[in-house]
Length: 279
Image (cartoon, one colour):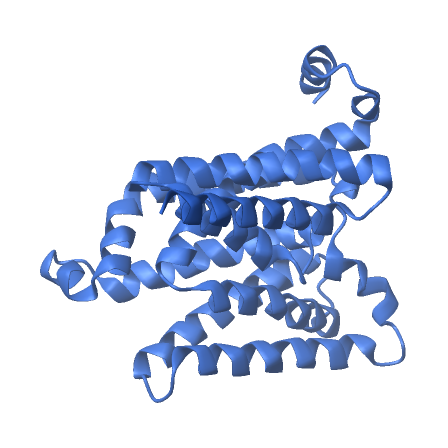
């Protein structure tokens, strides 16, 4: 970490970069925002915005179950519950007994309400309220290392499974004709989303994590002319929003996560205007 600190001092000779907590936050953002940009494109393509939002809401129930079972590390209970929650949603969705959006909304509402009820029992919810908006300024070196491992794992999955995931999102019949196991691809992608959401939710926040996944991809879709540009612009917009939001939040004293979302939202509306202008 010391080497990274020195590099940041050389590249960014600004007052905000003199603080180690800002350096940690910057490093974390440079790791996690590319993941949001990459995964967001497939979430948008596969129409899974409600799905990722529901996963974020399920974090509260994961924390609550961890508290009941005496699991000290809430990341573990959140991750286990999120993975099971994601697989359960996929299983119910495949039965097609009702619309996908309805199923996800019901489970999302139930999950969040259950978590709130359990955690608020006895008036103890205040110590968990920081999970709603997150606090990336509190991230430490060990947590940054964990994020880096998640980043590497996601990149491996992306390079190995991108074509199958893309084919599944475009046309399921076509994917089946290519001998692609659609259920396996969907489940694996859902698990990857669950892992990233649960690992980052403490610093990003339950209420806004879905926005950080969707907005860069949606903005990129407005201006990209091909798939390569779509992914590239999404990553650039995500990283730019993260870094600028961090810096602005430092100077005006606001929560970092919501500030990043506002920057990403502004970029989305600008790209929407550009798209309409060129049309």
